[in-house]
Amino acid sequence: MEKARVAVRYFSKSGNTEKLADEIAKTVGCKAEQIPAPADDGADILFLGASVYWGGISAEVKDYIQTLDKDKIGKVVVFSTSALAERAFPQIQKMLQDKDIPVDPENFYCRGAFTALHKGRPNQDDLESAKKFATKIMERK
Image (cartoon, rainbow, N blue to C red):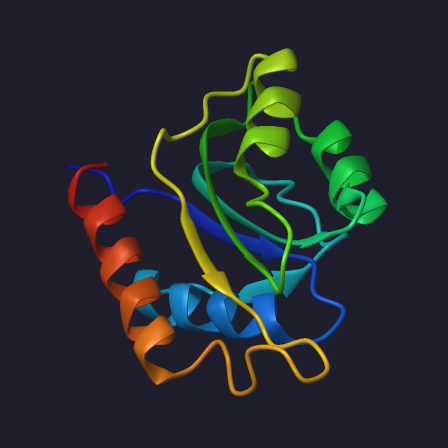
């Protein structure tokens, strides 16, 4: 059986989502790259990380999704952080589905530190949970 092509891309202003991206990439055996690093060679599985802000996901993530080629992406797996707002998953899922790019129904989310809120998050427990999530995704590829 051929090895799956896996990529991890993320956008992180504060470093919270970057921590998850690095842990997921280490788990799946690739390098996490900050958006707008393209997935030019395509990916069977693209782990896409975003932070959620008051207005939803960032313009950088929205713009990145528009660059994805449905013929080069097998499926997208979403992971996200936020201090208060809802998860990024519903917004990203809709954008990807509008482009006919499959989205895994499971996603990973944890709180991220912002000023005095959720200090130290994502913490070691969050990173361990992200690792377990990525392992589970890869086992059922």
